[in-house]
Length: 225
Image 1: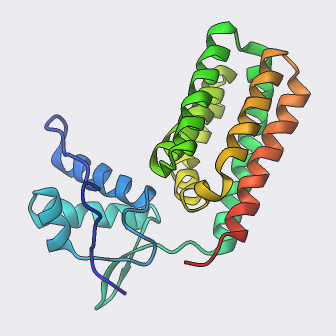
Image 2 (image 1 turned 180 degrees about the horizontal axis):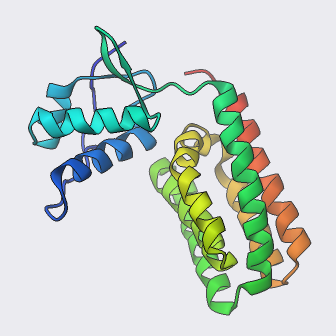
């Protein structure tokens, strides 16, 4: 395993408001979900503290919390490592995501108005630009924003809360296949927008189920690093 090597500019700026331990936790979680810190990577407290400009104590507390949440593995006499998800683990989460988002698409088709459709079209256009520019980070962020908007348009608070619990792990799994999915993912988004605009609940649900299944299969078929 290797120690904490971060790409230049990868470390998020710690904004002043809010407890330090929370800001350090959020910064490390963002580095993990964007894969600036790769699965299996050794996390050295002193190096992370130096990158973030803080003492080791809030880093230690953040790593313990991330361990509890399954993002980091703490190994006796070895230290902390970014968790490496098993194929079955990823499969289970992405399957749950399919169930949640298919229902969200159905509800969005029933409730979405013109402003919501316009917002989705704008996100889709930005996503297509990111793919054309080969900006993977932007494409991943815009993909998450698109799906979050569909969830918002569904208008079901409980469904949105459940989706929020898995959203960051979805980003984590989507990042390594974002380039592979590329333009096709946004083509599928456009087809979904059409179904939502037509208020076709069953077609919207089917398209979202197929779309998320394509991502799940792409994750399992991804080239080995």
